[in-house]
Image 1: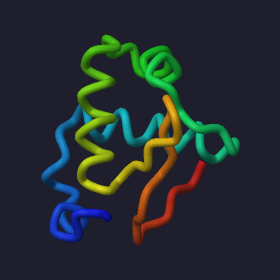
Image 2: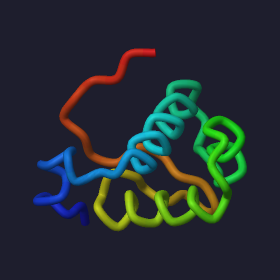
Image 3: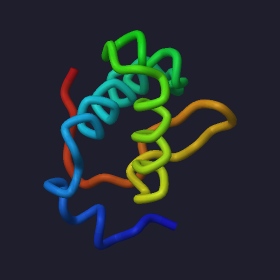
Image 4: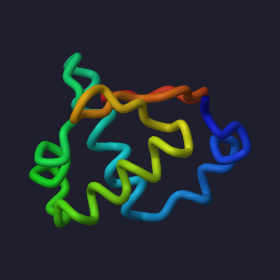
Amino acid sequence: MPDEKRLEDVQQMTAADMTVYEAVAALNTKERPATVADVAAMTGLPEDDVRRCLTSLAEGGRLVPKGDAYTLGTHDWGLEY
């Protein structure tokens, strides 16, 4: 279940979290779940950092784990790509 309090405050996200979230969102617009390797390749961040961000974003309800990949979780704002 998403952490509603954390979802309300996007300012609690770090710069790395935002970068990772945007990469997942970009991949999801192509109906493609995002893996650690996908996000690391898109962002240039080390895989360990990406893994930490993905885990944190999933724990907060912003992302949903799908096997070894992630999709967008609950959100109330639009993304345009």
